[in-house]
Image (cartoon, rainbow, N blue to C red):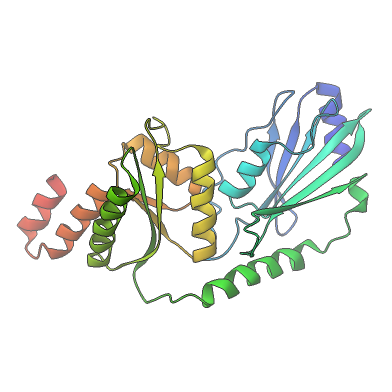
Length: 271
């Protein structure tokens, strides 16, 4: 497989990649440009609590460039991939190979581990056993947490120019609202920003941090203290692979629960 990818990549001058599931089936073929690939929407490949995506990405790189770049690492984390494998194209044949995977929670707070090889044939790994052991470690960590039988488990996020004291007050109010909606609060994150990202509210680095928290803690959703546009909700949800709502949506959900009459429910929906 690696030889076929490098032959195509070398002859076209483009990076070429595949998305492979745990049965070894190729689920996507990706044709990039000379510098990068763009992984397609894989949101339908959803995994359960504490589980990875069930897909690994294998792609080529050209011209002796760095085997792994920040986009590769971000994709690995944000998409919860089982692994990211990059293979150098050397005279249309496979060369240096890099294998990177996420890590379970650890004292050093390392998010991933990178292994390098002179050739893909040097990778001696039973991938099914490897990824099962990795997910077992993540789930073992979650079992040590005090998870209650709430309908949802959330990470709360406040982003804004406010100081820490003001942000903590806002997050405390948000936590009380969440509990009123039978949502267990797993963690609170404060990010001081003066300008919001119009597409994702926050940068990819912070969203990656939220995703890793969600994976380790067994979160099912992220609740933002700031109002989000529909575009931001969709973009963030696609990136962190968790349900995303804002304070306003949370409050409307509480009202909907308490609206006992048919007319009351209609008024909440109209609001």
